[in-house]
Length: 195
Ligand code: SF4
Image 1 (tube, rainbow, N blue to C red):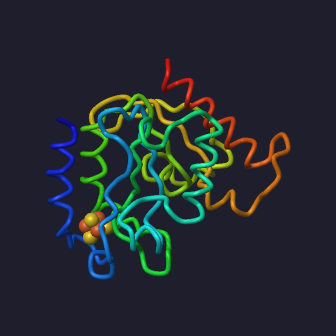
Image 2 (image 1 turned 135 degrees about the vertical axis):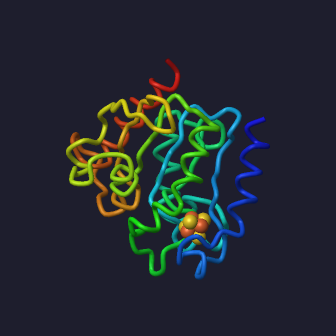
C-alpha cells in the first residue's frame, strides 16, 4: 500500500523541473530502504556525485560510514529505515541546497513523511535540522535531543544527529568525540524505534 503511493509520488517526481537542480541532475534520488517496515525516516542534506549517478542516497564514503554506524547500533538500513534528502536532485559541486530549492522540493518530502508516518524522524546533519527547526541552532548544541515537532499534520519525535560526512574528519572513538556521540545517538534512536 505504502509502496504504491510512493511509486505514484516518485513518478511525479521523475520529470520534475520545479527548481534549477532539475536541469543539471543525472538522476532523481528519491529514497532507499523498505517503506513497509521502516520505523524511522532518516533525512540527509542532498545527493552527492555518487548518489546522482546511482539514484540512491548515501552510497558514497559518507554513506559507507553511516552503514558502519547503523550496524554497530543494531539498526538495519534495509528494514528499519527509509532514507531521503531535503532535495531530490544534486546541487552542482555538492553545495548546500538553497532555501528556494528546498521549498520547491518540500512537497515531495512532506508527502513521503505522511505516507510512511514513522515513529521517529532523524535529521541527519545541519541542513535537515534547519529545514524543520530554528535556522540559527548549531547541530552540535542539539544533537541527540528528542524534539517533538508538528510535521505533516502530526506531532512527531525528531532527533538531530551528525551527518556522516562530518565524521569523516574525526577518527577518534574517545568518550565525547563526534564518532562516540554519533553511536550513542543511534543507540538512543534504536531504543525509540523498538519502544
Ligand atoms: S530538487 Fe526537487 S523540486 Fe528541484 S527539480 Fe529536483 S525534484 Fe524538482
